[in-house]
Length: 244
Picture 1 (spheres, rainbow, N blue to C red):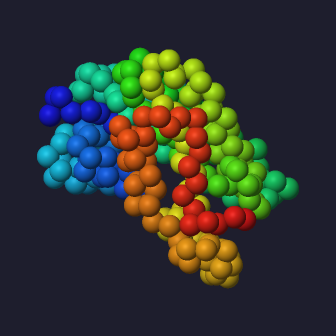
Picture 2 (picture 1 turned 135 degrees about the horizontal axis):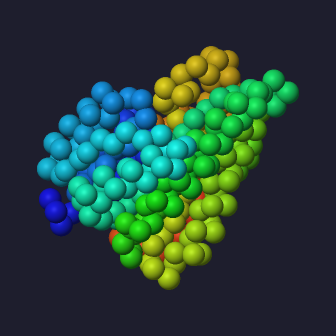
């Protein structure tokens, strides 16, 4: 297993992150699954990863904490001594109109989504080999905005700017940096969307269905592959054509 490429997926214990971790395992990557609270789910994901005849490890770290991210990289270095693919997926959501949004709700989302992307990437860079991949999970909310999501949209738009700038910095090392912008994806995060709101969204999706975590995972796996070696600084919308 030592010669296999290594991927780190933040927020990899459930939802989109879990689907990404499992898909990369199918593509023959050893996978580090980062989690903050769901240790049981993270360990379960690692069990599934190992069924693909690759290695896996669950690592607890709050991505909004710089020092915890540094400690996570030390664990990866000790376990694998390399990192080929980084997927910044961990995220937080706290929807409120700006008028009703508390400062703490703004800060929670920005610290997790945007600061977290910086914290993990900054600490991961010494481990990422030339020819590596960094894939950041943004959102179509970061492109178009969305009612009640000024905090979330701002964080996801920031990730897009971060992605494009870092792609320019790392190109000389043949490290590609791209973002995936999911649309309306059927996960725990979207289960609380009111029924009428869901019907409206469904009517706006030309494909006629919500996306699945596997739809996002497939796009990430492509960007992580050699087939995507000439794609960098891009934002790939995976939204079924949704434009809101």
